[in-house]
Image (tube, rainbow, N blue to C red; front, side):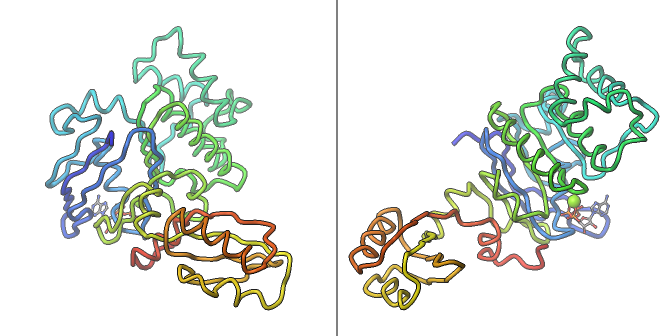
Length: 311
Ligand SMILES: Nc1ncnc2c1ncn2[C@@H]1O[C@H](COP(=O)(O)OP(=O)(O)OP(=O)(O)O)[C@@H](O)[C@H]1O
Ligand SMILES: [Mg+2]
């Protein structure tokens, strides 16, 4: 356990709304934490507090073990925040925009050029280097904002809906970038509504609803807590197999035929149960050509959490 972000009983009140209502959770170093929840759940407000842009009404926040209230300035330099509606300076050239941010964050003049090139390459905008920011498409502006967020090498990244407005290929590139950032040892918190895609890179998640964190933790732990395993089983034969798949194996909760003799089986138990089930199928005389344990999806977890109205 090595939390890099710790939030304890956080409240944020606006005039007549409590946007964050007693949130406690932590994010461990090196994780990609997916923040999900319906419109108005409080995700942006929470990220803005962590980015030191929003004063909390109550509660404690520590980043790298340092209380935010005491040392906002040094902490700010460890954090890269990408807002949901990024401000961009339309009349600057792309490289000038990045250079401006690099200078603002004290990146030494002699390394600035190389840094700009590195980040423009990362987000595939090198060929737009000399273009005006105002001439970029929405998705390109979004990618430029990500480059800006990375320009001073912050170890913690807070990304508020970075995938919105990106085409499928650009989203795939973004997710590859996130995995690279994790590989580089950074910690990422990302909010998104594209749940089905977050599965590909998130290692932890938090579900917010009406200002509360309904559930939060590492995906591996959430999976274990649920005590369920899902496995894809493909058999040679087609007919009359469901009986045998269920029969005499009490751990089986459900068997669903997906396609082409391929079944999704839900079992309650652990890895030992999975191994026993594998053996059971063979003992029942079924010819197994695939047996693949599946991750519980973020969507499954969300549904199990009881959060509602999630897009
Ligand atoms: N500056 C503000 N002044 C007043 N109310 C605000 C302000 N910012 C947010 N709120 C309110 O706080 C609540 C949470 O808003 P927030 O933007 O954090 O939600 P969100 O989860 O990011 O939603 P979305 O998915 O739409 O981005 C909403 O009811 C919103 O109207
Ligand atoms: Mg938001």
